[in-house]
Length: 93
Image 1 (cartoon, rainbow, N blue to C red):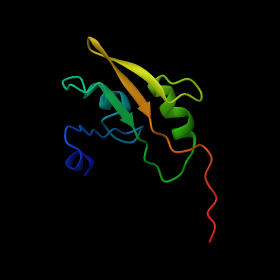
Image 2: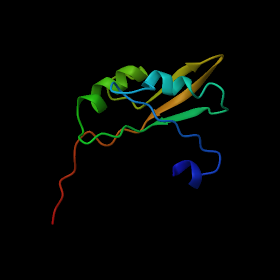
Image 3: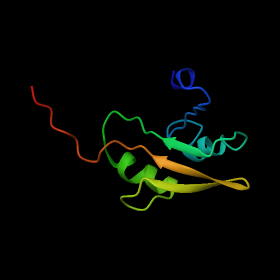
Image 4: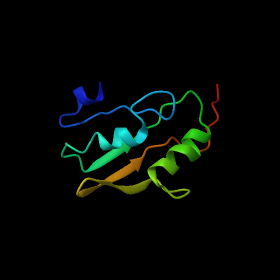
């Protein structure tokens, strides 16, 4: 839906550990595009260790960072980890 709404947007799907393509394969899939920035948006039912530790480690992010670069062939692309806030907000009725 996002790719249809925003011209020039390339959307890829990747999975952490239960399916393919893997996160790395998802990143590599941008190799033959002109993409110079990739937003990684995790989608999980709960905010936990995968979003806080596992995915950032796969992306090469240091603790507390949300930006890095990834070597994609002969060029580097910017990676922006769009992880939701680390502290859930309370909901008031």
